[in-house]
Image (cartoon, rainbow, N blue to C red; front, side):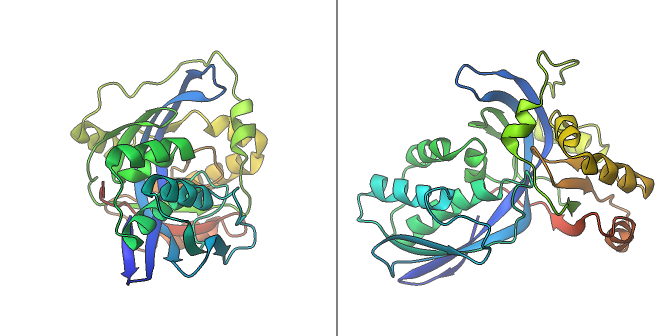
Length: 293
């Protein structure tokens, strides 16, 4: 989570997103959520959030008209919780430059929430204790606590149990962005319990994760099939990508997909995939990010 501009009355932060390299649904919870076991990695596809004190109350604008700017947006709720915890009257004018796809399973909204918290702590010179930041993150959503850490991490429960694995070895990913999103609620409702052949990542260390990323053994997403059942286009995209040697996987509940770029891949790999999938997806290149927690 990088502060890219700071001044006495304004701060801007870049808010990255994440990939689910591994995602297993362990079971249903009594509160309606699901217990998960995930390996997440932060990547450098970023939104930018600019925050100033030039407002009475909390005002949010966005360059994407599809993004709500009221309390439905996690940024507004994060700002409310910051001012409540810090004891300041709410004064924040915020503008979001949106570049992370909406409804893609990349956690862009979750990162925006932590970005708002970080920007306001910087702007008001009021760093909240880590415990308070964690409580706010958990209250904001399931993927949000990961973005307190970044890098590579194992996340369990609803996503609030975060075991940081440090900064992964430098690597590049292809991120495939279809012209549609997936509803997280619909994808989860399409899961059939009990699950057949549940996967386990077993004992995890930074070294073991790196090895399994390199050889492709880690990549798995229990939500991939339910998402493809709801959006058959996803299965067609994966088949087409594999025809040109790209092993693409859904991240989160979709609809975005990703594939590791091999170390020896030439720089034309993205152009080859873009040509093969023309009209089906937008192809972006992303690099993993080090931990920032």
